Image 1 (cartoon, rainbow, N blue to C red):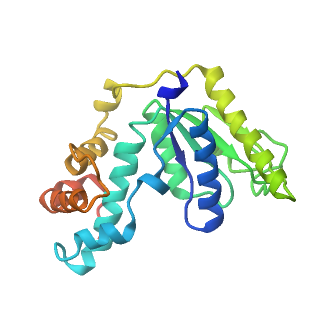
Image 2: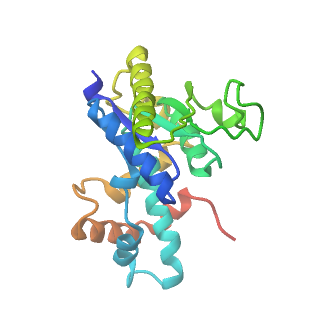
Length: 237
């Protein structure tokens, strides 16, 4: 059944250290046969999306539009279409990961908290959550704390392999069944369903969201549905 399980790795991706770790984790999981919705690879390039919106919106509106589109892709497509969410809780805690893990749990996804960090700003390294703030940790169904000391490339590969094996074994032991349809309790929730609605308005039926043609369609749909998409999000004053 593992080859039908889809994993969403929720993690910061703002520097080389983070992106390298994320890529290694995903590559290892895919070798086990899992599919992944990997924002670092499958999400939008900010520049390409910005270019698609340029000329269609006022310049001072483009940055907000890019944020909206990326939000609806991650929260309205990637997470709903995944079965397992891996939430990286290394320091500093990423605000996006905290939101995604909470949202995923409300949607009925199986959330695994991951921590490889020995920094313990809110407790002790040997407590249940490795010293991290316990509120985000409680959004997990299971929590893996795995410090990864490595002085050589061989040790690094060994530690990463063992870490991925732990994740794989936990998923197998949990006997997760792929979620083929969105549950009614999500569809009927006024705080959850609007995000799915926004994603449908932007992406429904577009086979390749990264192609020039796909980006053009998304940009035009954003313009057409701008008012509704902004209603779903927070009001800025």
